[in-house]
Length: 195
Image 1: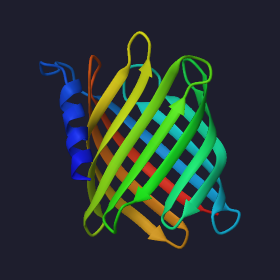
Image 2: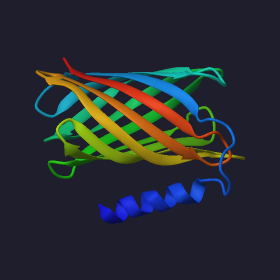
Image 3: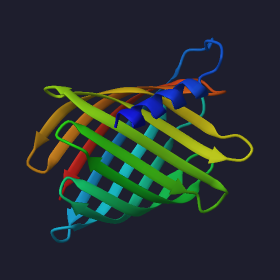
Image 4: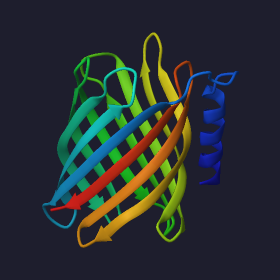
C-alpha cells in the first residue's frame, strides 16, 4: 500500500505544471446515486446516476450506468454500459471495483473504454479511515486519447454522513492537480443504496 501511495504521489508531481497556475481551480459538484438490487448472495444489479455540475467553464454532463455486479465479502466488481450526455454524447463500457484491504484502507478503481472513439477513462482512489467518520486519501482521474490526454491526481478528504440499514451517504472534497488545464476542486455527494 505504501508503494502505491508513493507511485500516486510521484504521478501527481509529474503532471503538475512547472509553474503555479494563475487561474483559480475549476469548481465542480458531482452528485452520485448508486442503487443496487441483490439477486442472491453474490450477484446484484448495479446502477449509477452521476451528475457533473461546473461553477464556470464548459457545461457539465449527466451519466447513467446499468449492468451486473458480483460481491465477495466487502469487495465488489461491476460491469456496466455507460451513457454520457454532454456537449458530445458518448457510449462506454465501465468496469468498477472496490477492495477493502483492512478495516481502515480501501481502494476503488474504474476502467472505461469509449465505444465511439479511441479513448479510455480511468479513475482510482485510495481512502484511509482516520478518526470516527473522517477518511483521507488520494485520487487520480485520467482520460487517455489522441492527440492530448487529460491527467489529474491529488488529495481527498471524506466524511461519512450516514450509515444505517442498507444506506450509506458520503461527502468528499478532492483537489486534483491537472497538467495543461485548470486544476479541479470537486465536491462529491455519494448515496449508496441497497434495494
